[in-house]
Length: 140
Image (tube, rainbow, N blue to C red; front, side):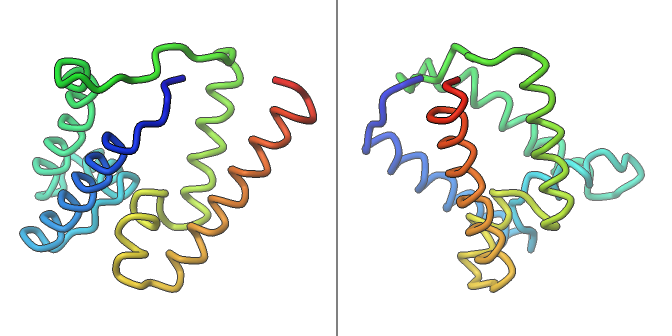
């Protein structure tokens, strides 16, 4: 895991917020990844092109970050089974909450959506419980 650096966190947060703002102003869309991905997978959707470009940008940014001297975590201390189970749990949570952390946390709270505020509080609470449980109860 990489160390927390306030400067890169502020830059990253500002870029996320600015990107979400631009998408809302220029396209009238919320930058929630689950909604963007589901719309991109509907190939007959006339809006699929910008969604695919958005997803490509997310993937490419992981390759560009080291070139810009941003470090990324390169080690995963979990089995593939646990990783896949975690992915399905996140997907199910996204389905239950009608959106993902980026849609609710970045865009929804910015729009003062009560549903997004509650969803984000639930995400954060569950994340804290899982971290406590895995680090202090089962010692992972």
